Every structure is written in C-alpha cells, then in structure tokens.
Length: 171
Image (cartoon, rainbow, N blue to C red; front, side, top):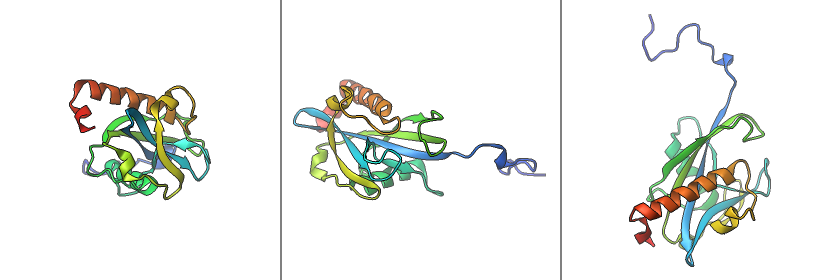
C-alpha cells in the first residue's frame, strides 16, 4: 500500500510531454513624471538582441519567489527582496517559447526611483535599462516572447494600484 504522498505504481512521467517553468519580472518606477519599466536586452538566442522582461528558468529546489528575485538580481543588478513582488499571472501558450513548452509565472512590482539603483546588465543580458511605458504601449519597442502582453497586463495592474491604494505616496 502506498501513502498519499507517493505516486501510484503504474504512474509513468514519460506519458506526459516535458515542459519548463520560468519567471518573468515586470518592475515599474516613475522617473521625470513618466512611468517606466525595467527591461533587458537578450544576450542569447532565442530573440538575441531583443528587449525582454528580466527572467529565466526556475532551478530544481528553488521556489518561484526565489527564482524571480534571483533572475532580477542576476540580469539587472536590482535586488527587489526588500520590495513586494506579487504574482501577476501565468502564461502558458504552447508557442510562447521556440525552444520547448514553457509556462511562465510573471511577477509585478513598483519601486521608488529605480534609476538610483543603477540597473546594469548581468548574466545572459546584454543590456538593462528603464524604458518609458508609453513607448511599449505605442508599439515602438517589440518585446521577445509574449512579453508585450505581460507588460500590458502589468501596466493595467500598476494603474489600478495607483488609483486605489496609497502606493503613489512612495514617489
């Protein structure tokens, strides 16, 4: 007899297609009265040279929050552990990543003047910087993967939070 925590004897993980889990982090700030989002330029394929949200694969033994903080720090030098990262949504379109089936958990946060933290590229990012949200919304910057959709949802979350919370006082 097996306990409830054990897989049934006839269970075969190979019966299911493999997939990976990633995290993506949408961090916003206000600079010169304009809402900005922190993006990285990808230094590796796929989408080499394209702008994207900081993020990457969740490592074995790592929970989602740890992965989000690690990827943000590795790719941008920004340590958001003192900030409140909250889950924005889960994205799992079968073709969102050309490498394999990837499900991503997106995080959202808004921080005070992020430019003071001097975002700098690291890890597999070629560049890191703040980009005006207006540029992304106008389609002036094509983002890798499905990051445009994630950023648009994060912008709506940001606007909502600024309207119904005291978050604006942080600026």
